[in-house]
Length: 257
Image (cartoon, rainbow, N blue to C red; front, side):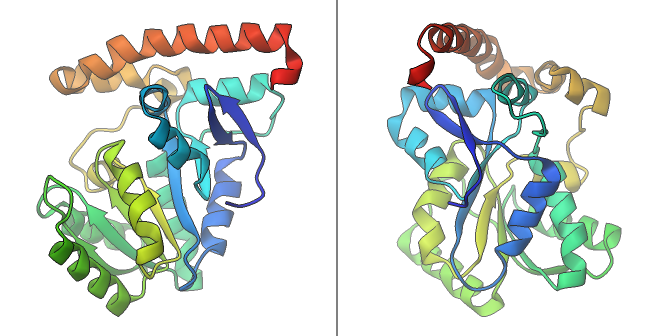
């Protein structure tokens, strides 16, 4: 964990930083030293952490747990972090990939449907000439077997990436990173989920004005109602109730903060 202040959202310490600061901290973690993993906090993830103490611990032990969703940005600013901005997984991935070219940062893509990591590599290297993507690995739709994990370890040791980007669903990717980071020879693991599909051109990204409004969830729900209805229509109201209760308690008992 780096020395970045965190603010408490329902027991999860969210890193109070901007996109530029997050980019610089990720770039600074290059090299073979194992620094840990980066989580991107959303309403969904924090709601899942209310039911799963182990997941809450994973967020709190990360190198960074960034404010990926606008509700978390608004909460951070309410707590006095005026310079805080949204640190969205696809945005940070693109910013790091772009700035890292001059530094020779080596990237590795783990995740996605069959062929997706290769599509991502092709799309990003075309968009950002000079980008070094040294390897890809497509996992099965289940936890890796010991033999499969050994193959991943060997490939990571051979290719020596600075950053290993993980694109599987949440909270599977957070659990994978927490278990694997100190067994893989990479500087950082970053769980960016849908960034693989977005940057590979397979999934539409919400317009910027929708993202800034806090209604990106509604845009995504319209695109994938069967998969996402439970996440948004059940979790979002619960999150609002829980955070309202937390804020009311903090007003009454400031020392609890």
